[in-house]
Every structure is written in C-alpha cells, then in structure tokens.
Length: 129
Image (cartoon, rainbow, N blue to C red; front, side, top):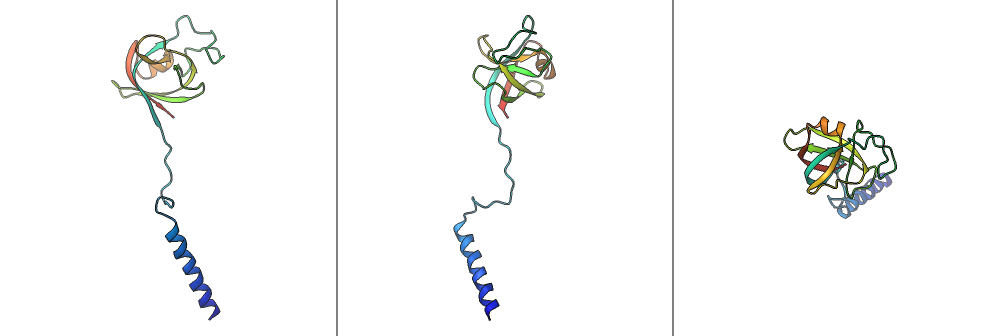
C-alpha cells in the first residue's frame, strides 16, 4: 500500500512537471552552432608592400596567413568568406582594419584570396563564426 502511494505520488509529480515545462523548454534535439550573416559585397586582397609590417591589431602582417581586414569586426573574430562565383570558402581571422577602397567589405590576405579563387576583386558573402 505504501509503495503504491509512493508510485502514485511520483507519477503525479512527473505529470505536474510536464505540464509546467513547455515544449520550447524541453527539447531532445541538440542546439546547433549558430552562424551570423555579416555582409555581402566585394572583396579584394592586399599584401604587396604590407608584408612584414604591423597590422592595426599589433601583429606582423603575413600575406601567406589566412587573415583579413574588416572595418568593424573585433580583432580575432573568425569569419567564413564565400566566393559567390566559385562557391569556394575560406575561414579567416580578422587582424587588421580596412578595406579602404570604396565599395569593398573585406580585404583578404593573398593566401586567403587565392584559396577561394580571387585574383583581383570578387563578390563574396562574409559569415561570422
């Protein structure tokens, strides 16, 4: 008899808890990592004359590294840059300020630009990771 009362009490507690928790609160699916669309626009590469010099973040610019310059994203932010023409993408770390050319959203290091097939100016989408 006592065991039956304990079982009924536990069942009642479970039903009450289920009624309080909404489906939005309880989910069997794991949360997906979110990415945030930052910008679409033109990208170019920079490097000639800057290799070995200090970036705005204070580190030495290496045209062979997977880095980029952006006007507003914090230094150290990683972004995925997708070449809209080829579909190729590269993950770069923001370590400098720019671009200063009109109409550009990001300046890539030479290695980053080559990785996605940009030899001059290309149309890209920038997604913050």
